Amino acid sequence: MARPFQLSDREHNELVLRVAELVSQLEEHPDRDLAGRVQELLQSLDLVHREALHRLLGLIEQGAPQLIGRLLEDSAVQTLLLLYDFVPRPMEREEGRGRDGFVPLSELQVPVWVPAGRPQDFPEGELVARQVNQHDLLFCSLDGRLHVVDNRCLDSILPLQLGRLEEGVVICPWHGCRYRLADGRLEGSERHLHIYPTQLSADGVLRVGFNVAAPAAGDPP
Image (cartoon, rainbow, N blue to C red):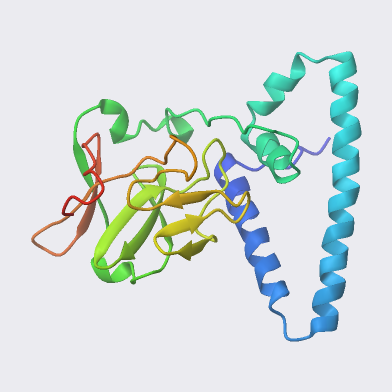
């Protein structure tokens, strides 16, 4: 019997991101008739999947409601339910050990500064995603100051780098949540993305701090 195909959490996350990129490209396709038909196809697939998920979750609730919590512990299942709005309040992703048994330096609870690139890698006004120390981070330089926050909408694994940037606020492409880059705060809420301090070494390498107190909004970088 053939072994079922299974993606790692990271591969699944990358695939979700790739799907979003393709949809964005198709929306801008110069052949508007083709773009319209592709959009109709995507909407039809959305309805097919949404209806099937609705029925599936209904059967689970009726026969084995205790499984719902276990389903939501799986990041791929959680992402699918988030995309189809079946989770009213997305679950907080568990923070902890890296994949394959790797223990991130941040778990050691000592200040560490990890290389992330050079200043020119982060153009003014652009959202740049990078993985640093097994963390998915979002970088954005605004008015000469580099902001670094977690690259995921709160309570999910869905990345933010495809979002829009408006006057220092990044808008989640999945849920429309608005986060101020200066302090990571979700507008209309007391919740916020974790923000990371940065420093420039003598050799011109930009480093991100882990287990280091991030500067408050308005403090010099």
